[in-house]
Length: 134
Image (cartoon, rainbow, N blue to C red):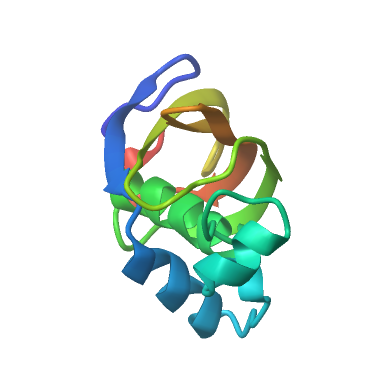
């Protein structure tokens, strides 16, 4: 993103929420809670199905920002809050707005929405590669 400025909108990213993504994300982050891989046990606990864990969501938010700014971008801080669960069969759409640019650093507000509401809201602080600075 050349000539970055506050108020700039990042392009949206659609992520299909599949069972494989949910289970693989949970396993990769060593989160073995049954609600992230066993639909029957998740239902016994009151959920209609398995759902994505926060560590997978955190990784997807980071990926979204680095995809927008390029492989030389460095995440300095990711702060997120979960809302509506990500269930299999839905799509999460990540959007972002540059809130502030200070030299080589930008603060980006990120929202990830699915069919039932906002799954994630957060702020990412990223150190920008040379070509993306204001």
